[in-house]
Length: 103
Image 1: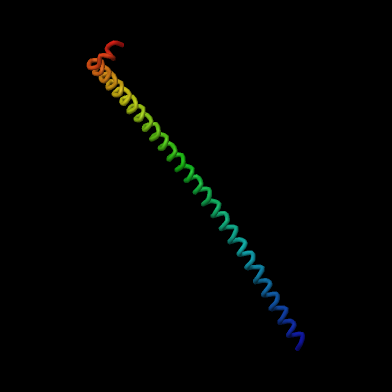
Image 2 (image 1 turned 180 degrees about the vertical axis):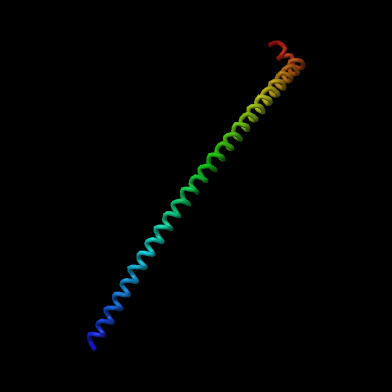
């Protein structure tokens, strides 16, 4: 009877260890599959982010160039307007002040 009990214990232990080994292999295979899937998604996402970064950088550079040219144009117009006003003010003051006429 003892031999039968030990046989049953041995069979149960073998079944349990076999199940653990089988499950360990399954978990390892699943984690490898998940790892490769995550790597593919990472590569895909990285390329999409890089593409968006390039697109956004070019758009920002274009806006910067456009804004710079508009600022330069506005600056030139302001300088011309200030030069005209300065000339008109000098002419007006020369006309009304005797000290300025003597210069």
